[in-house]
Image 1 (cartoon, each protein chain N blue to C red):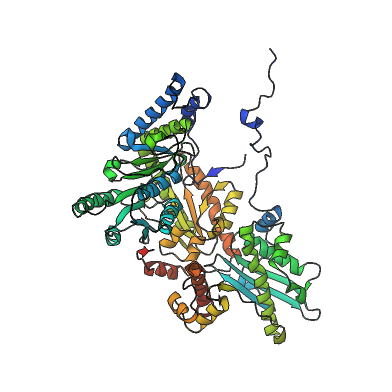
Image 2: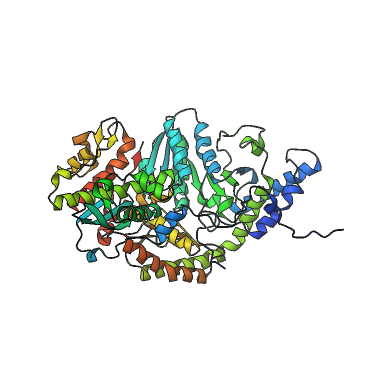
Length: 224
Length: 414
């Protein structure tokens, strides 16, 4: 009887057992690289000096928070450097790192172009993100715009400041995040107080967790 | 060789080799359908009967009080939906805010069908207060479901005490012609580590799952006390005494019985060993990493559970770093859940969102050795330091602790 050579375990001969022996990783290789080797990262915020614009967005309560510093070449109106810090998941950290590369590569990006960067552009450069992770990269471009606005403000170019578009939180009551921000600025601190002013979530309780997060975020932002 | 240190035993356990060996003949040697009358079928029938007997002895019930199901989630659904659907009228259900999603969502489903539902709060250690149960009970209350030991934070609930109270209360209610309140406990996490005696616990129903006690996945059991009315959720050939149809999963049933038998024999010694490792790890983390808070109860805690919130960092990023050095762990961060909501359990403790985002769960098991934890502790402080450097967040620990102490804790009725 012929000897059977290289006897494979039964499972290995079945199609459903993955043949690829390399370990899978939850995100793309580009994200992995930026996650473990973040570019333009700020290690100590107090060491950052001589920046032209500072932007901050998100809150630890939401799970993501980003802080962005930019250095601008005033003659060419180009962003020369972007430095950052991020509290967030792997894709949030990688997205900010990639954004910092996108605005500072090839001699810097003109501010008008930087303002046009969308979350999708960052996602594309990262080699794609799982759908439920897209919101992690949304914050990066918002943080950058907030830093650019801050630069406009500081450099006396107030006419260039762009207001972030409003976001509808409660479709039923037609309440936006700006309405909630306004309510908090007017002194409302609890859900009940904000509801008195805005009617948010009344008859649409599914939005309440988000409203509560926004109240916390704006309270922290303005009243720490 | 690259390190591989599994510290996620609460998520699922590897099958014990002795379990795999016990199951082996039932795949292709004794493969008969237990409902068939020839000897090959009877062999399977016998294996199920033996398994049922063995388990009944371990959890102290009658064999016919055990129903085999397709897992913990199915057992929970059968207990909750099955007992409520057996009622003609709309009833009231009580559960806690720290249950497994299977319990929460099964209860919510019934709520959407018109049954009333109350959620009990927990204290800052995750303990349910008997007084809250007393306050929540209504004339039409018919079911209470409480987790025996929490899967995320490991807090062990006073099931025996609650059960004894309900048993007494039910006698009074019978005189008043009020419905009996059935008591179900989800013991998926507890079964492998704590003594399970359904008489001492005074439960009417109890859920156990194979995949968390070194048994096979896809098998669970529901203990249903004699006299408890249950409407089956899966109709068919009437297997499992008409409570769960479908040809029995014989190898898995044998595996579940073997796993429980091994747990019963070994858990006293193993629980002691794990508790020692757990306490060492908790102490080590709190000494080597500043700004941390232990989630869960300091003593009334599963011997294998460590759950710690590390301020200023986010859990998913931490897990990715740990994975890179071969350590598998878990977090309550929203980023790892499909709902993008942070852990409801850690939130229920009164913790702010950021604490849930930064929570790290390390659950130990049979194959965890002290040197594994030493390896973890060699790297964890370094990773935390690195992620804190990346993070712009600087949480005030004192304020966080104050807000936990001040958090509102009330029964929520929907």
